Length: 61
Image 1 (tube, one colour):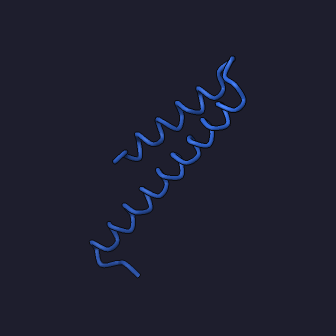
Image 2: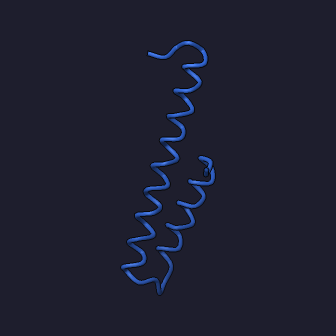
């Protein structure tokens, strides 16, 4: 499983690759879509970690 940091790094790398000169529009679109998915996954991992921490402390709703 990827970590939050790994997801964000990959997202940044894919966005950078999408912006390179010579990358086709089709490939750039796919790279940006993957980057967006990885950014979303990183956010969800953070939310899951926060929920788990709250539940451990007995603060869950």
